[in-house]
Structure formats: structure tokens, C-alpha cells
Length: 470
Ligand SMILES: [Zn+2]
Image (cartoon, rainbow, N blue to C red; front, side, top):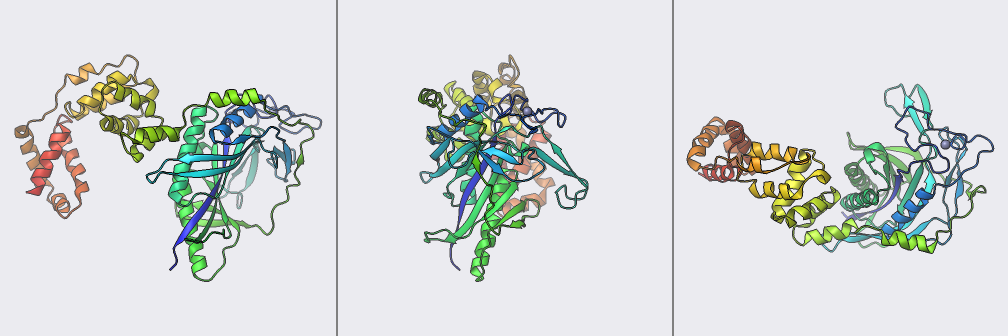
């Protein structure tokens, strides 16, 4: 059997969080009562004229610069025609052959030096309204009893980013998306949440034999709502295509929905020919000509890219930990905690596991107080540590009262408890001795329960290993 490699390009839609919509002054908040944020412009009443949102244009330029794009000296808005109930004008104002941002490169750090993803373009357009299919079993269009349209979303600003087919695995696609999302969030232009639809990803997938240079027929994955599902969808689709080629068949250009619950791909429709959107320049809008001064000011205001920060932290941690910290928005606090004297790895672990697990807002935490907790985490009882972490985001939090508590570290005190637990769980002891060392966590949990969280976790771990070896 040949070795097949996936070839993946992504199309990403980012909903900008501007105060108002793209071409009118309606509020950009569609989470309100349906059809309350509308006006003659976004409902396409005859004679209504669009006025572009300056902030949306600036934010698109910002994003383009963060993606390493060239900013076009002149960009145009086009009308993209297609008939659909969620599009009252019968066309969407989008950008076609003269987009705002082109030819970018986005670097993703990795163990082997990382990889770069080419950005074909980033352009600005208006979103369609939201169609809700209700009644019927699936919640989808087919089989529904009625379709309703909420025009609150209609006309809100949307940036579309198109990458080159530079991704070679599902995992690379996921890492790229995580880093892209973090970049967008840090620019302050969108919440970029896939679950809420403010970030939407379509993947173009094909496969080829390793060593092959051309591209084969690709298919499109749509309606995927998390990074993990994007990765799993790409994996499933690449495997399906490889099997088709292996069996002497032919991959057909098609759009699929990936159902994460069952891992299955459902075909959308066969594209018999490229759709004709009859693009033509929007006659009611003048070309956008970004001033050089503005572009340079935006460039100078860009924050340090997340990818660069991952590289910096990787030096003292490792790639995975550095990525978790940066893409979790934890790295600023991490650096402050380390600067306050905490050991790097311990600080990273406490932030990524305990702090996130307790749902604490990293921006609210006093780094010096957290550094004390990190330092004392093996010394104080687990229960006290957990409680302190949970409260570390509250105003005026002080670590000192918790540091005064001491964990039970004496082997003499802990040994009888441990022996009792091992004796009561012979089955798990056997499992551990057969090589499944993950069971250790179960025993630690039991000891903590018995001692009401007062045992020193490090000593418990050591004692357990010792006794289980015997
Ligand atoms: Zn409006």
C-alpha cells in the first residue's frame, strides 16, 4: 500500500466585534431578540445605500498585517449574487479580485522547526442573516417543518481568510487554527469562538502519494464546530480518499458534513460546475485606498505574535507546555509568576492544570501571591492548595494563611493508611503490577480522601510506588 499524505487548505470566517454592522448603523449584537437590529440598509429596502464601517476596514488591515500580508493600495467591494432567503438583497457585498490583504505567511512553531502556512488573501464582507430550521428530527433543512430568518446577523462584518494548501496533517491544521485564533483574540477584533459561530472553518482536503508534486481532486468539509472536530474530519476524509484511490476509484469533488458523534461524512451536494456568482463591482461604494500612514501605524501597534512567544517560552519549558500557555492566554501571568521566583515547570503546570481547572481569570491573579503557592504546593495540604488556587483571582487574595497549613508528610503516619487502601483494592494492585501505572492516580485519590486532602502528594506518590513495587 502506498503512503498517502493529506493536502489541506482552510477557509476561515471571522466575525468582527465592531459596535455596528458593516454597511449600516445597526448594532452588531445578534444575541438579542430576533429581527430587532435591522434598518432599511440591512433589510435591502429599495433606495437604501451602504456606508462602509471604518473600524471594520482598519481591523481587517490589522489582521492582514498580523498574517504577514501585503496591504493592497486599492481594494474593491463586489456584489456576489446568489438567491437565498437569508440574503435580502439577492447578493452579498464581498471582495473578489481586489481584496484588502494578499500574499501572507503565518509561521507555526513545531519540534522540527515548525512550518509556514501561505495566506492567499484576507478580505472583508458582510455576513448573511441566520436561517433557523425548526421542527422535524434533525434540526437541518431537510425534513424541517418551518424555516425562520433572523436578520440581526445580516450585514455584520466578516473577514474571510483563505490559506494555501500548505497543511500536511490534521494535527498541523489544528495547531495552525489554535495559533490563528489566539492572534485574532489578542488583536481584540473578534471573540473567535467556534462554538458560537464567530469563527467558522471550512477545510479543503485532498490526498496524494508521498513524493507526488501535483494536486488531486479535493473535497470540502463544512459545518465543523471545534478544532478537534476539524482535525478528526480531515483525518476521516483523507482516509476515505486514500481508500478510494487504492481501490482504483476516483475521488469526486464534493462537499461533506462531518458528524463528530459518529465519525461519519455525509455528502452535501455534487458540484457539477463552479457556481457563477456574477460578480461585479459594487456601484454604491468607492474603492478603498488605505493610507500608507495608517498601515504603518497599525503595523507598529501589532502585539508580539503568539508564535514568537511560544518559541521564547519553549526554551525554558517544551513546545507543548509553551503552546498550552500561549494559546490559553496564560503566558503573561506565567512570565510574571516566574519573575516573582517560581520554578518554570511547576508554574506552567499549576497554571495550565489547577488554575484553568478552577476557572480562574488569569488577568485577575496577583502573580507574587500565586508564585508563593506554586513554591509551596508540595508542602501544604492538597485541599488547602486547591482552595487557595480557587480564590487566587479574588481581589485582595493573600497566600499566607494557606502557607501556614502543613501537609502530613511523615511516612509513619501515611504508611498505615496506604497499606489499608492497597489491601482493600487488590484488583487495582494487580492491574498496576501488570504494567498499567496509570492506576497510581486512583490510589493517590483514595489516600487524599482518607486524609481529607491533608497528605503531602509527593510523599504519597513515593510511598505508593515503593509499596506497589514490593
Ligand atoms: Zn441595518
